[in-house]
Image 1 (cartoon, rainbow, N blue to C red):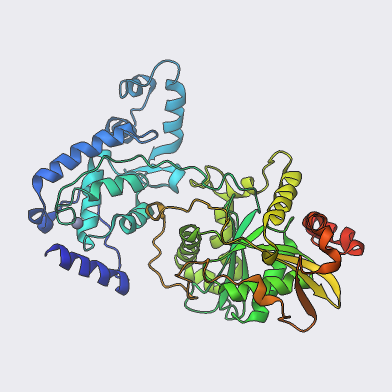
Image 2 (tube, rainbow, N blue to C red; image 1 turned 180 degrees about the vertical axis):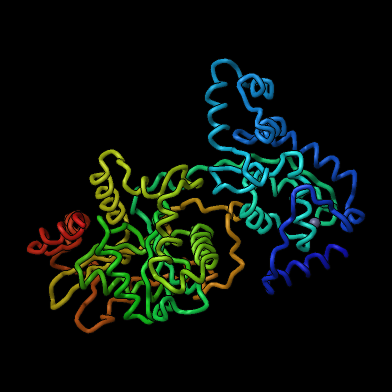
Length: 479
Ligand SMILES: [Zn+2]
């Protein structure tokens, strides 16, 4: 099979969703062995072990053997690494003791990874390669997604590294030095609830509880905290209702709403209606964090699909699998538990949050800020992130995609630049629903001198009408 055929098989595998053939520890490469460059494989095995030993927290072969033979003690452990000494041996010992255990089936398992199987370090390279060749030279990311379901210690980096030594896929035999993948929260600079993305998803084959065909999914950028609401349809009425339910249940209104799956024009109209109906100050974001958004969608789809029977039968099971479990578990991407991060004490959070919003509204040009009116009265404020000065946020790199996004998105994604497809405030000077009138902030002559003040009050209260201020403060700050 040449490289091209390999690619075709791979593509077929993707579309046909063929079942993954899980490799077993110690499995030989078999018939594939002769197709692969033996020299490259031997080099790979050595390079891999050298790399593994440099990774913190990974069991080395010697340590693995101590666990497997129940011979783990201070002395034995000390001998496995020159980095261990009298001062740190106890910690390391307790760590290993608590985490790894010899299960009844005589294999080593990892408590931190749902008791999944620990592959003997010396066998990881061949395990990964077997999985790769058995599954039509599967891409390392997809391969990792499958392997990690079964093996506790086959990491993303390991999979990527090992697959490089497949001479079919890497005909030029170029092996770049493996970069250690470091997790850190790429959105640590944002405040909790500063930016939230909303996605419309229908991840299951049948409606949930026979009623809900769609799910509205929300995720906070900073904390990765997830919320979900069930939808009976994807029509505007249901979307608007769920969207307002979500916003009005939050301790504060996010500064920016983003989306990868909802038509931006539609989202604008929904935001406009909700902001006006409930006197909210809302922003529509323009960030180009497409991978981050798609990764969120892909993760949810995967979580629900892998528990699809339970999830179709019960909405609370969807909530558990898609949101609650995620919100309460340690998340590598943020190095914390999303639920803790959402409620963590950012010092002076309330003041920081409101000042940030105030500043950003002030910076926006007039055409991007829309004062909403109802019955002649100012009610609600909608602003659009500026196209030229949009905050350039980092995105999750495609290579850090934890879950493949090969699945079809339920709603067409605006593949083109989100900027060019964004609604312009000017287009909404005319009312889009009967009871409201939309005007540009600075064209609203009587108030023109007050605009900075309006922004300030609007940002603090969600409303620019004096008499409503107190009510709305309560509505937007107290749950
Ligand atoms: Zn290959």
